[in-house]
Length: 427
Ligand SMILES: Cc1cc2nc3c(=O)[nH]c(=O)nc-3n(C[C@H](O)[C@H](O)[C@H](O)COP(=O)(O)OP(=O)(O)OC[C@H]3O[C@@H](n4cnc5c(N)ncnc54)[C@H](O)[C@@H]3O)c2cc1C
Image: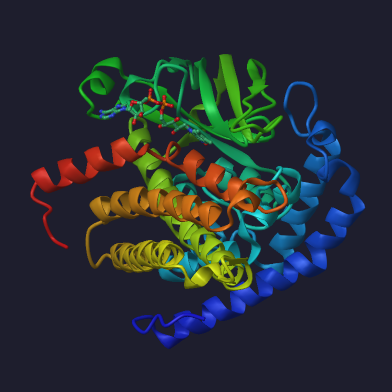
């Protein structure tokens, strides 16, 4: 299935074991729930309420999947051991994501939302569950909240972006002011994945105007319980033709947060956010490699089966070139992602810097490659490629969507250029 000659045997074994286990988990635990809840999962009009929020039953099914996955050891496997996670290293993470996305494809992961509703929850990411950011969690959060997150019983969200601040993180308007021992937070957060459903939120707010204006700290990360007074989940944002989503708008109106619920140090929020986002960028790159492979697998099969002018379309050079372009994109994104993951592992072991430039390179490249791959896959399939009978248009929509979160393609290029101009010109 894969050459991966540079990957040590122990990592390969780990990846094989996890990927196989995860796919079996889907068959044994997720598929029966999908059958049980087929009526809502097969119709977005029943899956979402009129505001675009997942109906209660779907949320409950997701919770069931998370908790079963946690018991089976998959849910928090990518979180570090120090916070109670599985500590799966970055290369293994990348290969597991790749294998999972390749096998399930966009149709089982996202399509029509319903079909993807229960295949996303088995593995937590930094936008909904335990992650590297929790190494900064203060004692009360570690004691009281983290165990519930690790069990998959509760979820969290990453609340950084705002209506007027997406790429330009430093311009967030949410403010936290001291009041005795507490902090009081006010502001609006937008585009927050899992925001409509999260039990807790990591909220980023300005605590020092001058430092934030000079991009020298001044933003603090707070752990907030979304049931606390003043916190509201205002809306779910409908994206790319769907009737609802995971993405939402949150508002905080004088939400009182205990002083010891600060993640890390006061003023350290930007670094904590970047730690989470870096994890997300690498995971997106890896999942795009898998999604792209799914599209190529389908295209290779279809091209050999579908005939035109008396021969399989695979015999036309125009089709061969599209298949070859897909392979070029997949090979490049896969090995760039694995190399970046190896650099991340080295950084985690204190043997090098965090590969900021490389993480941006693979996030931008893999997502854009994935979109090219799906565009070609649709073309290879002709009219069939556009239908909802195949998940290819959904794959295209996913790739198109992923060019925005965790830093747009333009912001990745900005980061790459700035890193090089600061002297990081190693490759
Ligand atoms: C599906 C989805 C999920 C998301 N999940 C989360 C989440 O969980 N938590 C969270 O906090 N946020 C989340 N986001 C928000 C996401 O991080 C922002 O949408 C993203 O950073 C872009 O911000 P923006 O939408 O405000 O666009 P803007 O920042 O307004 O950018 C608009 C355009 O200008 C370009 N641009 C901006 N600045 C520059 C520059 N300096 N140079 C060149 N071009 C520039 C951008 O690339 C873009 O093309 C999510 C977004 C989406 C779509």
